[in-house]
Amino acid sequence: MDNHEEEGKKFLDTVMYYYDKAAAHTNLPAGVLEQIRLCNSVYKVQFPVEIDGEIKNVEGIRVQHSHHKLPTKGGIRYSMSVSEDEVKALATLMTFKCAVVNVPFGGAKGGVKINPREHTEKTLEKVTRRFASELIKKNLIGPAMDVPAPDYGTGSREMAWIADTYMTFKHGDTGAQGCVTGKPIGLGGIRGRTEATGLGVFFGLREFFSFEDDTKKIGLSAGLKGKTVIIQGFGNVGYYSAKFLQEEGALVVGIAEFEGGVYDGNGLDIEELFKHRQHNKSILNFANATNIPNSGDLLEMTCDILIPAALENQIHEGNADKIKAKVIAEAANGPVTRDAEIILLKKGIVIIPDLYLNAGGVTVSYFEWLKNLSNVRFGRMGKRAEEKSYNRIVNALEDATGKKISIEERMELTQGADEEDIVRSGLEDSMITAYHEIREAMIQTPSITDLRTAAFYIAIRKIALSYQMMGIFP
Ligand code: GLU
Image (tube, rainbow, N blue to C red; front, side, top):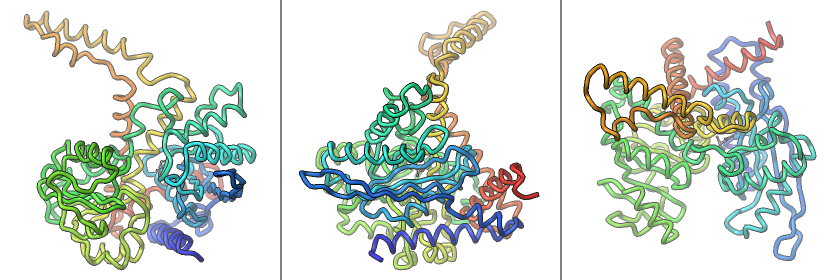
């Protein structure tokens, strides 16, 4: 077993441990619990690609964890650390993630063993189109079957290649764009998908911090204003989480990336740091911030909220004891290993778990899929009608009060919802509702004492209900 395979196994063990821990609180039949736990299908393929004049074999994997609802859903990651167990762990998480936020999909995940940083755009396009073709050949992708999305190392560019490949094969199928989400807007993507995961992380944290009874238990006041935050990862998820938290008044004091970290006790200016990185290709040497050469050290520094927003297995038995944060907010999938979790919970640290906290991405993917099936932009049909009716209300108010409302005020009061407003509202509602369901489960089942177990518990029960409705068990 190479190191990546070992890491993948550790990750899968962790997810299974979390599942079993929650399943123990249900009284569901053992066979049902086993069915909900197991990966329903695993497809592994090796395909040849010509890279710089040489033929290389590339490995691709697609795991569909649960078919209790279709399509299955989950991203495709490009990384040298891709292994079967890693993809299985991620696919498993997707099933529970969808259930937690009431997205009617089963879980899936894919991976291609390739380092995107080492290859040209042309090569990446060839690899992506070929992997998509392999999935199409086996009927493993499609709007009603399995719908990939971006993940670590992929983005809207790769999704566009997949969509185009699929549409070439399925010419004439009106819903074909719904074969993949996270696409560019011009190709059936949706406004608000890019920032969705980070915005979801923000909504989740805001919900946790809205309950003073809960924040008091860890010695913190309610609200995010003034809370200190350290984030590992300044990719799409890390950046947007930081941006929305800062807008709410939190102080993002540290950011860790693979080249090292930056720390500023007065708070980093996230937009400026973003520009700095774009310009210098590194977050280091930023304004008044101190460089932290070993980015792992940032995880152990004092802060209220630590947000791992990179990869799995980052907080492990080797560093868990040194974590000083009061809240760990899992923006990444699987950042805390099972051994670490035991230590962290004992220390009284609250973990807001991945299967809830980073579910904003798949939630907005669901909206994108709905948009593709209906072939119409959200807001297109109703926006003007809404505006007309608000204008009538404002006119009536003016008549009744004899007071003239300024043009600016009128514009603000009468604006109808466009696609971005609708997406954000749907995301906000999904994150708030899910948090309340998780919190309620902890209140109703006092033997459950942490948010992860509560999230898995409600997800397992929802999935079991689907099987029950199908008549699989009485
Ligand atoms: N890759 C993301 C995740 O881990 C998004 C999945 C999706 O949108 O289907 O949740």
